[in-house]
Image 1 (tube, rainbow, N blue to C red):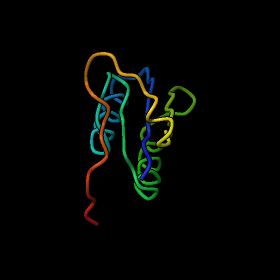
Image 2: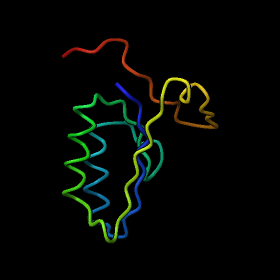
Image 3: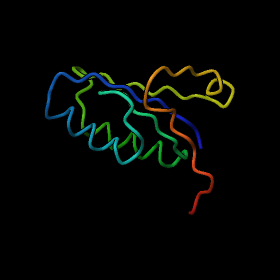
Amino acid sequence: MLFYVVVYDLPCDKRRKKVADLLEGYGQRVQYSVFECILTKAKYDELRQRLKKRIKEEEDSVRFYPLSGHTLAQVEIWGQPPLTKPPSSLIV
């Protein structure tokens, strides 16, 4: 599994709500348009496909920032919420 920061900027309220609702099923919202997600490759691919159907690429912006263990260890957080933690076990 890999840790992703997913950020978006969508001018349309309706699309923004749909994207936020979708992302809530994949990760934790840490700011209004920022989610932290811990995803397998399959879940990452699934999320990308589902998001692509909800946005207009000529108007909207969605970015995925993968963070490795080394980079993740250097993240600084001031205030709340804490960094999303990977589950201690995964049931498949």
